[in-house]
Length: 340
Image 1: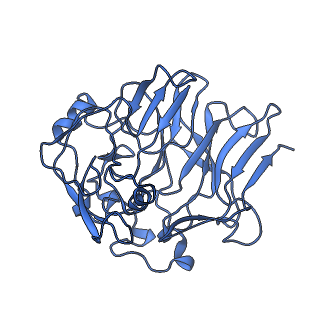
Image 2: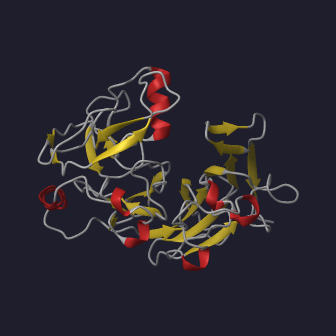
């Protein structure tokens, strides 16, 4: 069987929301695990820690690949392990004979084999979670190639975290791995494997399926469920009129950035050209709970049946605030889409 082990956060450093999970489950030594030995630049970050019991401090300084409160130094080596975060694996059904395929990815929630045998995966974009969060990462689609490092936690959607696209806090967008580590992991290439497609920033791609030749979806194209934005600023001016400091208006934002409710739909993606187009969506462009009437809320998974009908698992109504994710019971739906 093939499976993916996600990273624990967005950017290699323990984050504010992660601190609450560590506190709740009493796991103070939790940290990211690299797949190979990596050498650090010694970047450390102030992690917000208010309202938790594991420390009385409002924030603690923490390094990359380190437990909460552990700082790192330039030249420090973090040993790699076979079972690492952000990696694809293959194993027997009982979990034995585990082999790692590739690592340096962030969070995959949908992957399938193409008709020609390639492993294709969606990838959740990184979010602006302090202390090393970044804005405007795409939702990339990758081919998973054996033996490759895809760049995380210093590259996102195939480009470096230092890129101006990822503003808004430059001091938090420095490399945590040394140039020598980049060269070693990239095996002499100047950049990681590039995505086959890049979907709208913060649309939260989830499950995917290849076409079956019905509903005008060729067998070599995919349908992708988009859960929809969780970052408040992407709920549009009506619901979130004030942008955080340093966040530009949409007209001045980076390519592929849409502030007004990105996601909440199913997209069709041509893997050869990278072109994406809406496949199933609400005419309002909003999730059902924010628009008028019924329709899609937060699609998370897709599947065909033997008759060519498409099923969509819709998670239902979810709200995000300072306490985290709050799901509304009994709002989830399974949709059946049939061609007349």
